[in-house]
Image (cartoon, rainbow, N blue to C red; front, side, top):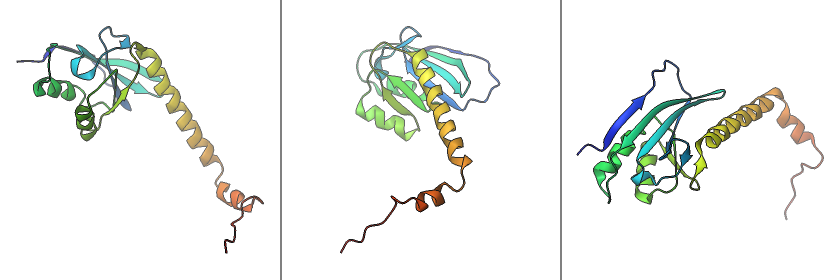
Length: 154
């Protein structure tokens, strides 16, 4: 039985630094368990840009079927992170093996807010990196501080 009922992909020539997936029934909120989600929404994320890249709709079947999980995992093949409401521990480990980190969030978490959070963290990380690289003598100045002394423990 085919578990993917339809897939929509945008045509995009851009290279995306990160691809992130969301388990969603309404395209706007994370509101689904990974194994039961009717849809995965995949966005491309850059420091200053976010674009919808793909939507994959699944046939929703009850129970735990390996084929059902395999189709969902393969839909995440180029993603680094999956946001969902819940995920089984075994499937969580399977995703880690293929390089996808699953993040559990509360039901009805807005996707737009998560995308902004990813970009905000990205900006903070780059800003911290550039601040560290501005002062090449930062370690020497730390060693010269009076408070930096090793204690003699006898």
